Image (cartoon, rainbow, N blue to C red; front, side, top):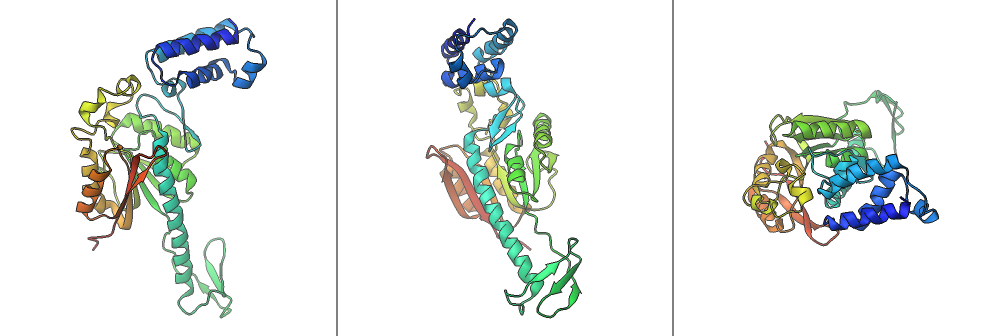
Length: 330
């Protein structure tokens, strides 16, 4: 078969199978299995395709006709510019979730700057002007104040690392992206699924992300407090799942989809317990369903969160809810 004939065959079969984005996926299959991109196609559309390549293409194409997601077949999905490994143990990362990461990263970076400024001022003391500087050796051992010309032992430094907890981590795409984009941040990934944590560990290793992985049901086995809790929990009402696309309802893990009767079950649990795991002025970031914004605002307001806001995705739909907790600390 020629390359042109192969592309036409892929396109027709995907369209007949009900694949919504059959045009894009046709080119993706051509590039993935035949190693032919658009430029190469237009340069030589009538070139012959080797038989062994056609056999492998046929194998995966049959699976896609059965509505196995392309990302699972390829074993990868791009998220925040990184290639994440995925299989049927985890949800496929969506572009909508990138909105959560972008908001969190912006806030974390701002917090790091603030912590750095506060530390600098604390080291100097109230009487040292901004024109004077304090210099430290590489080991933070001695300091030299240009105002007084005296070397003194540097006071013990309070940790300025920002601590982040990614609950219901799945593939780890949220927490790992934060770890990559905000170096020197302590990131913990937690999930109830052993399979999901195996995938998350593989992604952390592949991407060189320094994270901690914990298995447990939400806050089970979580210790300490965090500056940020990020979560894309199961939020689809149980009765809605059967009406979803075959790729989702038949292949993505129901454990990561099913938000029980009203889709709010996991939000309630997380919101109720989160204050016990947040530092003062700690922040929480949720991905939500497009119709859940008002419910999340109510739940978070009732629990004492402040500055609760709903953020929209690129399609203009409610997608992220954020809030700050500052009450009830001893």
